[in-house]
Image: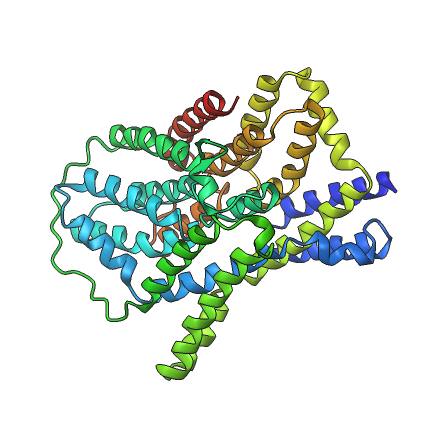
Length: 424
């Protein structure tokens, strides 16, 4: 049974790489096979799926859709740009702003919100928007690892490690991964300053975006505030799905307001359509697949392989996990990779008899930031290049990597060193 499960798992991953547009259906088909042939017992299907993660992703996507529609992100970007003297600082400001937004909102949504501002600046100044869009994309991808709701990989880590919103800031009496990411953001911003040192065209903002509905902003702020509040409630006194239920409940409040009070049913429909059902289906299927390979012992076998290769040395294993994750995530989507590796990391820590936190954080840093190495390594990058393509700008891999590689190396090396110093 173990050989069969491993074979199906390997074929699934190959198919995920070969057919990225069909990955949710591939994962679903694999999960069904796992259940039908008895690799994962039917009674374990519901418990294998992390419903807190699924609910958080769905609810957050809905709230973010309403937030984008309110035009508040565009107004905030305009306010920032109004203070910038030239193109270089405008790019840096937009990329840093994209990072801040992305710490609380999906990376792709962040790019879709902020990239049009950069496009508008480029049109007015008659310059190429390529560098600005790439900088926004890689910065949003970086900050996705900063908070529990910043990226799907962060939500997955929170579910696997039992971490709440505040644990990303301070965990077990030490500073959390949020501050490590901010250090990486500062160092990588210096890299961007050097890369764009010659872009000194002056910039003038003629008009600002007008926001007429502040309720979505209140919803998003309430979500963050409530996630912080419940993080102080002992786990024994709340449901495992508490975070997810908060996100979904606030989304429902927003939809009821749109449908009943604002008489805008089309907005309700469009919000539902903005929820990425494909990602949710992919994750649910992956949870079943991972539950199956864990059931037959493959997770333990993979962890033993890591341990044997690194010689029971924590530093060697930590280094291997970080940089293997960087390389792998540069070419494949980090969601299935992180979902697979989280139980492997837990098993490695158990074999070494160490706290898994350092390995968890190393995995998140490597897998999240590794996607910035190439144009196809992260959904945010693909979205940014898609916007450029629609405007007639075809960006080569070499052009992207001239920004992506130094940016990634600066951020990853900063995170790699700090996590080891803090958590070893």
